Image (cartoon, rainbow, N blue to C red; front, side):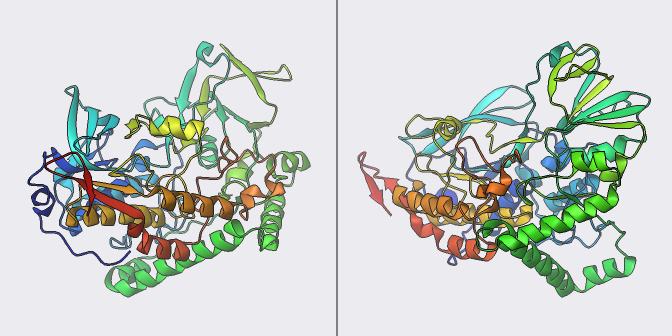
Length: 523
């Protein structure tokens, strides 16, 4: 975006001194990396009158909620960080979940956000007041429910935050222990237990090898196999850590190289698949060959190696997931589940698999907003997306929901590095908030023609992606929604998206209610 001047600390309130005052200028929902990034950007721009509501007891988002065995980041740690807050102290090339949580806590201190957090505070609903141009935020903390008003809301609830608990007949009758991977019960021991894991996606491939040594027997229920490449996770040498700490430009070079590599892989392997189909075919052939080399058993090969196209689902990597199935105390089941009974899980072929514990590693709902958002037309945003289509201008704004920014919303996730998504969506949100304040507008809303133009451009661009290719049939990918759209991934390169966002504030209408009558004026 074009450069916007910095605001003085009191500018937000001063700009609206002749109007009804909100309790706070802005509310950020979520204290994960996106929420902290938004807060840090607001502080840098001189807007300090905001709060960050977080339902958990601390920062970290997904890295606080997900603590299952084996959890670690799946892109190189050096690239998985804020550009403005590099971490030279990662222990391994792919950091563990505990290290990511520590990094989040360190960044909260580094960004001086401590006084802004309201932990153990769950947002229940947002409702826009058309008379005052304020959002009414209903929330619940340890004391009880309360409501406050705010001019702006930046919702950083996450694109994948609500667990997708499978609807399996009879699961309530199970007499053993059920563990959801996102709410791992560390007080319950799996030692000596017969354990079933349902799901072999990004979570499953980390959990399964991590618990195999502990349990008496492990039964894995797989619906769709995943492409699983090799993964090497060496320790980062002390000398390299020293250089990353004291030679700052080296860290920037390494990170930039990682971003460029990810962008190239996404752009030519996923987004422009129609133009370069041979790239994904070649990559798929290499991964399948690698998987065959690691799995010698023909029956296991048939079960574990996908027959759909590469990149239809997020490619995965693991040093020991495939090898786990060579063990005599691990069983892979590909028959669909019929029901759960008290003793275990029965598949459609009539076989009863007796287990003591069921682990649900079944992923997340895409763009499921955990709170109601009611806009100017009285329509709840989640319901609108369910009945119509998931859409958001630049992945951040929806007409009818003024002064609200999603970080991210549909078509807002860029590639495989979450921090690229954070940079674009929170950057757009904060810049438009500041532009609104500078104009002394009370309402900012993306224009419907600009929204329609972006949506049309994005949906047309998705036709070239790998997800719309015939090779993805049978992949059960979450990238495709019930409408046949692919709103999760932004169908543009990082470089192209950055250029688009630089001028995005011109697509918004900035208005203010006249102090003497009900008419609105453009400012």
